Image 1 (spheres, rainbow, N blue to C red):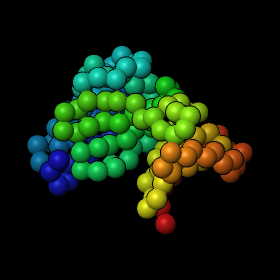
Image 2: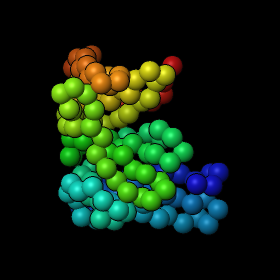
Image 3: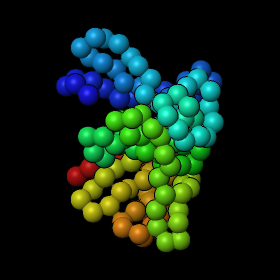
Length: 143
């Protein structure tokens, strides 16, 4: 990605359930993953299906994580090949979350905002904390 490029999601519409790249230099938007058809499928570029993709997290130069709210999953998009996979972790294996909306990476954990809880994923351990009676947790920034 060139400097000034922007990755964003389009959700809550029957026409858009995808992850896009806005190329600042050429003033053009390209779909990285997903399509106008919603659903759940891992795969290459537009073969991947999302259902209300929400929060984004750039984990590394090549990896973007997506809170796929409608599928109750956290997805991983590899920017090198535009391949989408599902994030699973923990013992026992946890692949499903409750309407995840936001993601935040700290020095030692991945935090996932889901309904009225924050899920803390640290190594193989997954902890859920009830923190409010609000419907959705949205991370604006980390301190």
